[in-house]
Image (cartoon, rainbow, N blue to C red; front, side, top):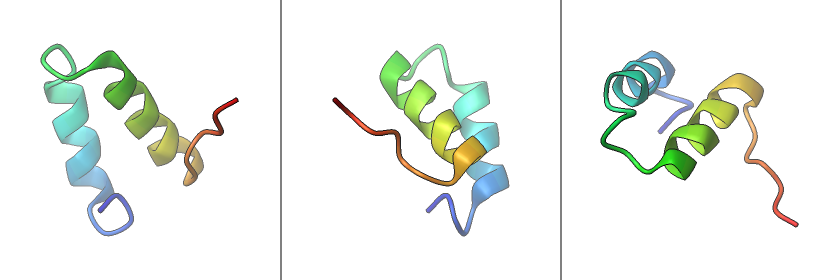
Length: 41
């Protein structure tokens, strides 16, 4: 979804960050910035 709708996803996350789980916001913004999922330990 991010690949096709990067601007829309970014806008949605930033506008709704207070009502979304913090980890979802953090991970989505990381994917938008890097283009890849973050690695888990």
